[in-house]
Length: 106
Image (cartoon, rainbow, N blue to C red; front, side, top):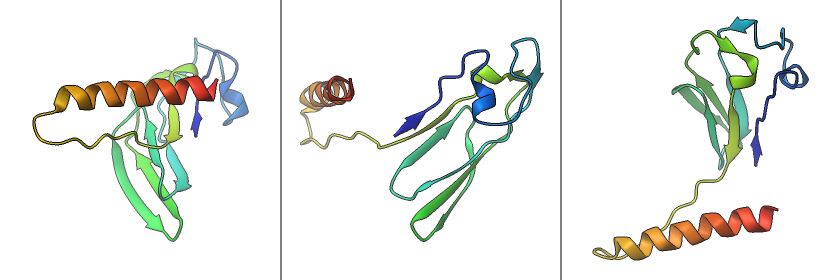
């Protein structure tokens, strides 16, 4: 799994840019990820193409913004399946599952 954490001078490690809060630009992000993973960014998906084991996800162009606001996330979707009428148990299971992932990640 991967996620961005661009502070005012860290975006330049990912892509060429004027990495200062005073400079703003529009961003059009494309991510190539393993096809079984989920890809997210600041904007909605504009297209998604699976080529063998790789998925190419293009996102709509962002509004004018600073580089430290650019977000790219690649990971797995956490889901819980429950019986009809047991939604409270499902919410609890989802909450515990997500917290467990955080705990073991640390």
